[in-house]
Image 1 (cartoon, rainbow, N blue to C red):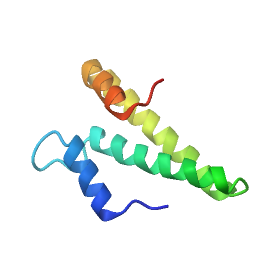
Image 2 (tube, helix red, strand yellow):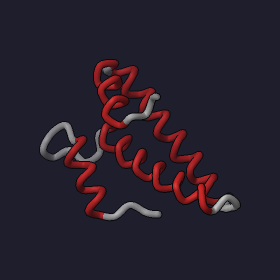
Image 3 (cartoon, rainbow, N blue to C red):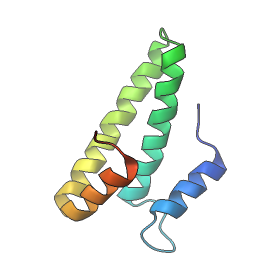
Image 4 (spheres, one colour):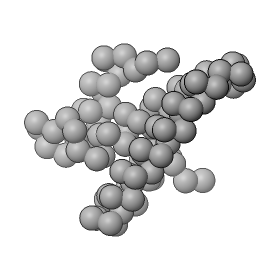
Length: 89
């Protein structure tokens, strides 16, 4: 269920804003989105895993707060991030 080091480095490479960027909101949102996707798949097969469900809800709320921050600071970047991550249907 956890993210591998290689996948995390790949996500950082895709979403970084500068060469030394590893912790910008864009990168954090991408990593959280990947973890949320994996946890969602896990919960489809393990319906009674309530501890993981709680963790999923905490990850979703953290991603929501970061997305609100990005939307407040730069609406254009927010729109492109939503599109790149396919978060809205």
